[in-house]
Length: 234
Image (cartoon, rainbow, N blue to C red; front, side):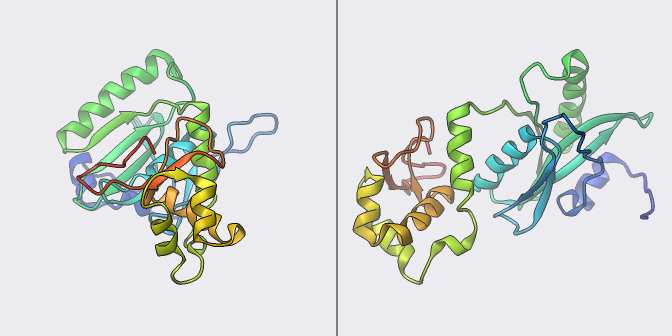
């Protein structure tokens, strides 16, 4: 067992690598309940992150895919009040500039009621004091959640395929075209499709993730014209 150490929040935020710590809270699996605790393999860090619910795992998936701010890692953090009462588990993400994101992952916008909203206000103020960001992340709609879950299945580097395949895939989608046409232009579908989905996950290719993925969906290269440009909703 490790030793419990109390430290000022402002000091701990700068010196403690929360993203490298195991979760403080215990995520129990209770028969008959379907909140879905488990582990998420992060493509950003190559490590597993504990998730206490399906909602938290979905948000971990979103954060793992979003590399625009140079994330260094994502983990779980339990926050306690001054009296030691557990406020609840949250996701903490550290960026390479030393700042961080503390995020709650409710299953629906009203989850937790007034108590959760009051806690959110207090945590938001605490984060603002040290230059961090606090967010109460809204659940994803069904279609983008399903699309990201599908693409996440191809996030592992092994899906880049043989040497030279990814450049061929990107060249095939120099201009937006239906997914199946670009994949066929790059080679055999069984070999190429995992590389296409991998490139879509990592943002090298883009598509509209607010509509269901299918073989005729338009896919194109990520727009490189400026920061944050993606060339589409994907």
